[in-house]
Image (cartoon, rainbow, N blue to C red; front, side, top):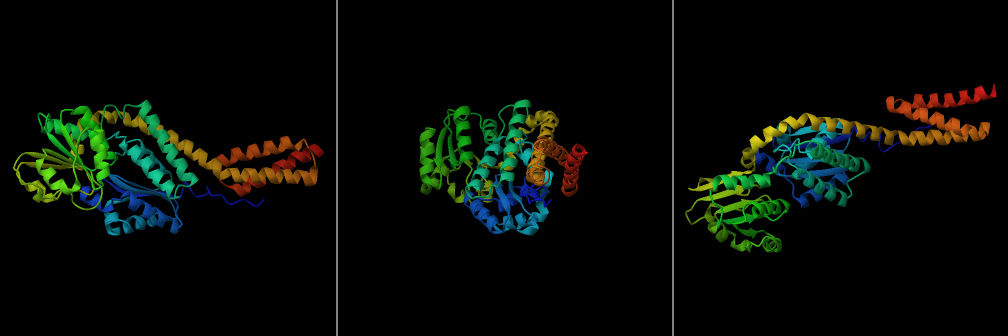
Amino acid sequence: MILPNTSYKNSLNSFSIIGINYRKSDMSIRGKFSLTDDGVSVLLKQSISKNISGCLALSTCNRTELYGICDDPNELTELLCSNTNSTLEEFEAYGYVYQGIKAIEHLFKVASGLDSQILGDYEILSQLKHAAKIAKENGCINSFLERAINYSLQVSKEIKTKTKLSSGIVSVAYAAIEILKEKIQDCNGKKILLIGTGKFGNHIAKNLQDYLPGSNMAFANRTEEKAAAMADEYHGEFVSYKSLQQASDLADIIIVSSGGDSYTIFPSFFTTNKPRLILDLSVPQHVDPEVKKIKDITVLNVDEVSLILDQTIAARHSEIPTALKIIEDTLGSLEKWHRQQYNNPVLHLAKSQLKELNKIYFNNTVNEERIHKTVSTLAIQLKVKNNKGCLCINALNSFLQLNHETIS
């Protein structure tokens, strides 16, 4: 029996994740590895030319990761470093690599908030979905990667339903609100300038509207149409990007969540002496470090913002064992699915060739039941052992033995 090739043969073992996150690197290092949506699309197109079977790029303020099916994960590392401001040496110092079932487990932990800087933060889930959408648009989601992502969404939903890992409102966007409450006694009438109108900026604006309704919001963005739309949605003021300097000088609070690689806020923006709070939630940072030296201006970056939620996070740690058990069970389901996909072509071929054998040598209609029994037994054996050649020979012998006994 000639065994067929199968596209699933090495999908699980060759599934790799390479990345860098908040655990080993600070914001300045992570900024070197960050990718914009346009940068992700360029990278994904390159992955196709390099024959990487399935690729996805996830870039957030806390991590940049590439997911791919390839013979050598170094292919993904080189792809990331060649498309960012980073080097291979920096990746070796701060990065990590997962392969096979360990990579799937890491994906599940990311999707469920177990690997988030703020434990249980589910903002990562929408970011993962967005990354998958871009990958699919670029033709980089194959059947195995799509199934792995779907399983990660499933495990995330189950953990959210069955545990209190996400109890309360905890995210970097909400942490910004807590800091405003802590640092500024009364936000009523305070001028809050939001720079950046992406999904993260929208989260912040909604939280400001919900929790600090008395504040005066203003919106600025390089794409001015987006800023105008947000100003209209949240009943705030539109600020032309050309007027960013004047608006910054007038603001009491500035929250920056912009994309790109260059600074947005500079020391020269501030000519009026008054207390100001600036939250730089961008990666890489968008506030010139020199701004922090100006008297009465407090600047906090995304890592510092995350620290305020330590007490809430501590209460969530008791939910980790339950979440890990859910991940373990789901890993088993994915492995079972993978084995089935791997074995299906063999089972179909075995059934086809047994039917052909019966037609040529026996021409026995009773053998349909025997063929079904033989293939079912082979399917059970393939789940336990991986020696397809020997098991298929055994199946053939079993079928012939059944017919020999009938003839005798």
